[in-house]
Length: 158
Image (cartoon, rainbow, N blue to C red; front, side, top):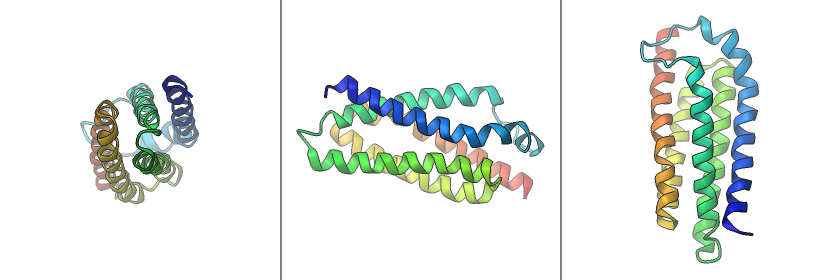
């Protein structure tokens, strides 16, 4: 299987996770989320879908680049992709906690774990393929911002 097929498979997986999370997010964005007090730096709702789409694409390319090195670095690639799957799962769980359960505190605790798993994935990816590691930097930055936003929303609405 060539690199581009691996990237395409990773893209399908990432976008499927994003779509799954959006099915829980969408109803709450229209009902519960507007009732919350939000900090002044809260972005407009329209920015989230294109931003997450871009981040899922970057994640998929990164995963595909790492996966492409499986013959040369089998154990390292398997471990890196395991961390990738863990962080991707945590990514989806955050939406269920915040929007599905409407529990910003639980989501805040979970997003801290998510960020740590993204960072660990970054450390593993960069050893295998520097470009793959760099592609995760915007994701880490966005999740750090999301954590601050999550914490602010929790604080303002407790």
